[in-house]
Length: 267
Image (tube, rainbow, N blue to C red; front, top):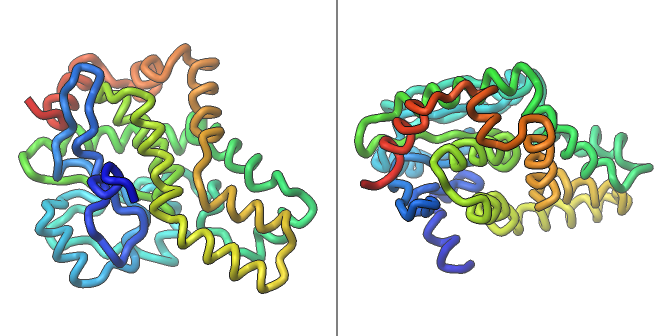
């Protein structure tokens, strides 16, 4: 792993894709504060050691973007003293991150592009659906309330890559982080979860899954530049820019943006 990635990982060993957004530079040259903003996969499997680690890290708010069914199946383990906010982006998991391999096999057996096409659809829904818009606006409410020093907010979904990745795109843009940096952060998932994805694909290959299904597993369990580029194209085509989307759809005022930057950026 390169040094930059090592800096973003926070050392949680019983969860997937736990990353610090602190340290990223904005266009104005400021940095995001450490111990303020974390993105992760689900918290269902956290060990007592890692729960204590997150408590000591300052985690005071957990925002869960998963559906009710995902939460029922794998409820979060929340650090002591932290507030849990159930904030579903979809009424069901449109990213398919939590779908069974059997379901996926039935859908993808005849179509190698099923997983890829489905992910593009899921990203469109994150931008346009009422449930997603409500969830991401509530996310900003939590971000704006996280204004005490050294208190961190975690936001996550099942794999910590799509619903979480779009949330990161929104908040990092609001903070003035360059798009190039946002894309690099988005793609870090492929490095942090490479062993998991390769192990899953190999296991399913041995179970006799065909190449179409294996490709769909890769496309659904990983992130691709095409996914975030598709989201950005929809944002630009339908709203003029991501900043317009933040203003018009997320209803963030100039004062909100200033407050976010005051909370999350170093002086």
